[in-house]
Every structure is written in C-alpha cells, then in structure tokens.
Image 1 (cartoon, protein in one colour):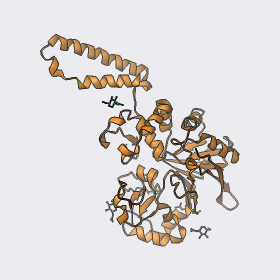
Image 2 (image 1 turned 60 degrees about the vertical axis):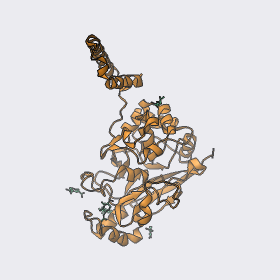
Image 3 (image 1 turned 90 degrees about the horizontal axis):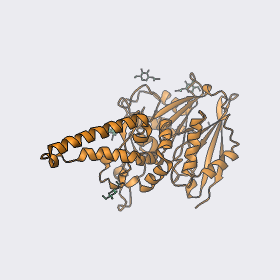
Image 4 (image 1 turned 30 degrees about the vertical axis):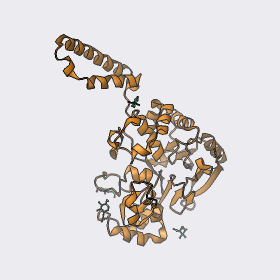
Length: 391
Ligand SMILES: *[C@@H]1O[C@H](CO)[C@@H](O)[C@H](O)[C@H]1NC(C)=O
Ligand SMILES: *[C@@H]1O[C@H](CO)[C@@H](O)[C@H](O)[C@H]1NC(C)=O
Ligand SMILES: *[C@@H]1O[C@H](CO)[C@@H](O)[C@H](O)[C@H]1NC(C)=O
Ligand SMILES: *[C@@H]1O[C@H](CO)[C@@H](O)[C@H](O)[C@H]1NC(C)=O
Ligand SMILES: *[C@@H]1O[C@H](CO)[C@@H](O)[C@H](O)[C@H]1NC(C)=O
C-alpha cells in the first residue's frame, strides 16, 4: 500500500506535458484528476500517517545514562555481537541469571543480520520499549545501520551511483550513507529489512543511539563506561556541548563509531576499518592506509603508554586542549565496551573490552557483567560465555 502511493507521486512527476499540449481539455481533465488524487493522498496521509511515509526518525548519536536514575539496577550486562542468534542470547542470559528488574542489558551492536532469528532479537528490543523497560539498551552496529539504510532504499538493486541512496540522519551527522554502499549493502540486508518490517525498525531507530556513556550519577563522571559498536578514541564525547564542526575529536563520525578498527597513530582524525589491501585484487576504500602508521585504536588506551600516546597526538591536534595529567585522567577513568572486531576475538584490557568472539562463525557469545564495589570504589567485571552452534 505504502509503496503504491509513493509510486503514484513519482509517476505524476515524470509525465511529459508536451504530449498534451494540443489537447487542452485533456490537460484540464488530467490536472483535475491529479488534484483530486493529490488531495486524496494528502487525506489518507493524515489519517494513516505511518503507512505512507517511508522515512526514519533522526537518530541520537550519543546518550548519557546516569545510574542514580535507575535505583533498582545493580548489574550492567554488556552483550557482544548477537547477529540474530536469539537462542544463544537467551542461553547467555540464563548463564548470567538475568533478571529484567535489577539488570540493565546493553547490546553492543550488530544484533541483526547473519543468524537465523534477527526478528526475535528485534522483538525482544521493541517489546521492552513498548513495556517502557529502559533497562534494555542497544547501540547500532554497522550491520544494523545497513538494514535501516536498505529499508529506505527499496529500489537499491537498480541504483548505479552511491548518491542515489536515501541517507540516514543522525543528530551529529546528516545525510549519512555507509561507505561503498553499492557493494556493501546487499540484497540480503533489504530482504531482512522487509521481513522485519517498517514499523518495528522505525521503533528501533527512534530509540537508538550509537554510543552510550554510563556514569554513576549526575555528579560523578568518574569510572565512566562507554558502550559503542566499533570503537572510541580517548577524548571522544568528553565535551558534548561542542558540535561536530568545532572538534571532530570530541564528536566522532558515525563511521568511526561503527566501523573503525585502526587509527593513524599521529593523526586520530583518520580511522579505518581495515588495513590497506596487500592483495591488489581486493578493492578497498582504505587502500592508501598502507602508507600510514596504523594501530588498532584500543592500544591508545594503554595506561602504561599514556605519555607516548599523548605526545604522538599532541603534535597534530591543535584543538586538543588537555595537558598530560588531564589526558591520563581521561584514560584512567574510562572503560570502553565494544564488539565488531571478531578477527581479534575476545579482547579484554584494562580500559577496553572487546566482546565480539565470533558467535556466527561458531565461536562464543560473550557477556560482561559490571557490579559496583563501594568498598573499593570501583567496578568488578565478570565474563560469561556460551558456545554458539556453527550452521
Ligand atoms: C529494477 O529495474 C528492473 C528493470 O527495469 C525492473 O523490472 C524492477 O522492477 C526494478 N526493481 C525495483 C525494485 O524497482
Ligand atoms: C577521574 O576520577 C577521579 C577520582 O576517581 C576524579 O577525581 C576525577 O575528576 C576524574 N576525572 C575525570 C576527567 O573524569
Ligand atoms: C566544553 O566546551 C565549551 C565550549 O568551548 C566550554 O565552555 C565548556 O567549559 C567545556 N566543558 C568541559 C566540561 O570541558
Ligand atoms: C592494568 O591495570 C593494572 C592494575 O591497575 C596495572 O598494574 C597495569 O599496569 C595495567 N596494564 C596496562 C597495560 O595498562
Ligand atoms: C589529519 O588528517 C586530516 C584528514 O585527513 C587532515 O585534514 C589534517 O590536515 C591532518 N592533520 C595533520 C596535522 O596532518
């Protein structure tokens, strides 16, 4: 129904008026018909607004969760890339003795695609939204974003240029289309998008974020936990009152948050999802990356190398106003929980916790529990894993 109506509007636009010039009365008749049709569509739009508008809401890039607003929550459970493995996810919840009243769950992205039960995972998220349960949270991963982009590009199989893609809008970055969409957004993403349906994906997008900062209370920003799909650089989201144009270090791009694996060591403006291709047959956006000194972004959070990291970056970041002491405080007070990097597998360091242990490839699904220890004034984290069945 919705697609038919959209097509109708398109056809009226593409009519060639030259054909009608000699038939005045036909034109008049046509215009009358058109006007009637337009009014009819307008009315039906008003009466049934969500069946006709194939547009997703603007997505919030960043949200702060202040735990003092959740007095019942005493555990935070971060879950790695679920990828439609709903049954494995419920086994992991059992393993963790999940209690929806006292636990806050945070999926670190790529919960859709690949596995058999993306719809069940989506239902779990959307049902909790409908129940008003704010204890179930998720950040969008690159694959979840591709599903949303496919949804609003029903004709994508006929696109020949990247510019033909209808974009997603984030509140920090309008007109976002993932890199290389003609190749990277597949018919399987579109098929899945249509199986999941506009209504539920709209709800998902409406309550989405790309990064969470979870702090103990409104007044206590120490021991902050960040959840993001791909990664975060030291300094990201430290000052969110600035906008993206002021300093890209404070407000990272959607690509950085959802795709990054590597960063240029001496210019953090440049992040990459893969190393430059040694194999020339493989085409990649990141082709000139081979020339740069790239490191995995999580290595920037190594507290034993703070001074070197600071000096490497200080040389080029003229807007980076911190001194070494402030910089090491930033690193020491933050833990980043993420997924995305199945090739590194489970990847636990002091300040970065990589949870993508390759479930869809027959690895494990990983969950990391955080419980606040008031005696020692720090979080205690505990890892849980369940095996995934290779299909
Ligand atoms: C793509 O183009 C072909 C050939 O013109 C057409 O048959 C098909 O319906 C188009 N697909 C979509 C989704 O519009
Ligand atoms: C880091 O944590 C300490 C105490 O744990 C706190 O005094 C300080 O303000 C925090 N710094 C930042 C930048 O959050
Ligand atoms: C964030 O940036 C604004 C604008 O430069 C500044 O006024 C404010 O003090 C900064 N906040 C923090 C916490 O650094
Ligand atoms: C990790 O934390 C421990 C304990 O605080 C510390 O001794 C160690 O140096 C840290 N390691 C790294 C690589 O940051
Ligand atoms: C860092 O990279 C950005 C983007 O490629 C570029 O605009 C900027 O000039 C670079 N900074 C330095 C100091 O090379």
